[in-house]
Each structure stands twice: as C-alpha cells, then as structure tokens.
Image 1 (cartoon, rainbow, N blue to C red):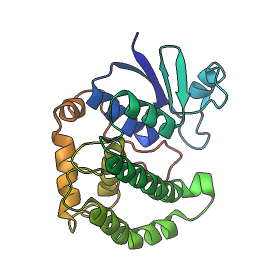
Image 2: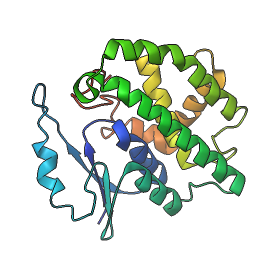
Image 3: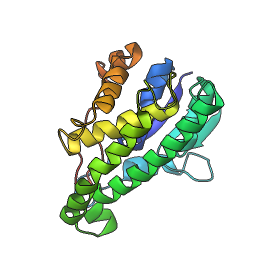
Amino acid sequence: MPAVLGYWNVRGLAQPIRLMLAYAGEEVEEKRYQMGPAPEFNTDDWLTDKAKLGVPFPNLPYYKDAGTTIIQSRAIMMHLARKHNLCGNTEAERIRADMMASQLFDTLMSFVRVCLATNVFKTDYKTLRETFLKGLPDTLKSYSDFLGDNSWVGGNNITYADFNMYELLDWFRMFSPGCLDGFPNLVAFCNNFEALPAIKKYMASAQFLKTPVFTPIADWTA
C-alpha cells in the first residue's frame, strides 16, 4: 500500500513534501481537497475527512504510512528526511540545513500574512504587499550570502531544507518577476534543483502543480 498525502489542491505547505517524495522515489497516493469560492470558501470536502483522521491535532497536510499518521508539514518533512537520508551527511550540514529551514519558515509566515491579508488577517493587502516587496531584496541577499558557492544549503549534499528553499524562491519568482536576477547563485540553485532527474520527471508529469500556490481565500494565489 502506498503512503497517502492529504492537502488542499494547491502548492502551499505540501509542495516541498511532494517534491521530497518525488525525489526519493516514494510511491504516494494524494488526497487533494477542494475549497469553495468566495464568499463562503466552503471547506466541507476537508471537514468530512478531518473527523476521521484519528489523530490529536487533525490538520492539513497529513501523511499516512504503514499505520502511522503524521500531521504538520515540518513533522512530515523531518520524518521523510530521516527516512530518505536527507538530513545531511555531517553535523555541519545538518546544522546549516536546520538553520536555513527555520529561517525560511519565518519568511514563509511573513509572506502568508501578506497573501492572506484580506480574508484571514483582516488587513490591507496592497499595503502589506508594498512593504514586503521593499524588504524582499534584503531577504534574498541574506539567502544568497548564506548559500555562497555551495551547490546546496547544507554544502555538497542535498537536504530537506533545499526543498523548502526551492519552493519559496519559486513563489517569489512568480510574486515578483525578476527578483532573483541580481543573485546568480540563487538562479543557479533553482536551475540545478529543477535539473535533478527525479524532479525534472515529476515537474513534467500531470501530478505537478505549477499553480495555484494558495487556496481561493488568498489575495494572491498565482
């Protein structure tokens, strides 16, 4: 029996997990839930299954495998990292991967507050977008400086953090076209990631989601 990954039919928090599963060659069956359009943003498709998960904190994404159910995107990614040797081969690599993954999550949460401004956080999308875009070059410079001449976040070997890194950078390329132009190492990182044979195959498949990034409740979905 293949593992099961459940999430909305968007990229969101599940896309790095999907990329990890594709890279590792792990067979997975996906349950992609649909959210209804405005103004109701109906979630009954998910709520029907939520009560049946049988875990303390039922939420999306979830991952089921061999009788075990894991929720929370980071918990799922760390499980897969351990399972498929994507934590780093040395302590130095593991430290770099963990630091960058945590930093990326902080940036992701800031970005989510922008993209879900109107309907979730009851704030002004236009104002938050302008503020975020002003700070984006500095954010990208910090990522570029951290990556340096390394092929991957940890160094020579790909780790779970690279899947987070690629996903967030790809969102930013859609949100602010050209934003990576001043950072050739980040451009090279994205190109190298997309050229990985398993990733290239997955991105060419019908299972790959290019858009949307967020559910219809967001101001920006790509």
